[in-house]
Length: 181
Image (cartoon, rainbow, N blue to C red; front, side, top):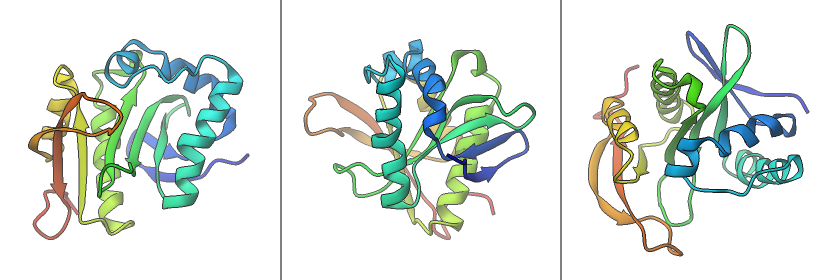
């Protein structure tokens, strides 16, 4: 399966995930920060990873024309994380998501990828607003969302099947938005 590059930045390439990424997904989805802040997706084998990629990525690309993209270092094509837009049934707007392997935290990669995704959302997808949410404990994500220009809105339930409340953020991408051209 060939990969489709969606966005390139100075240091990164964001491309659609493929079944060949199964090992990377097993590593990322079982990393400590993913398990703590996003949750256990039970992706522990190659078959489970392929099913997850189909259900949570390839399906989204086909249905919405966007999704969560694999983030690769431009210099060596190494996958380091995910960043992109998710359309959840409980939200009227697309939400920005991101995750990076522990070895690549603290280098600005998530900021660079997220900023590029927001620019893509405005220029290519013509979205007027993007939302994001995070746990109350995840201060790194909260700080990144604010740095990207998202503003805190309130605390709310995001998933109907869960009682957990999340901190909810949004950014307007129209002429009054804070995204650079």
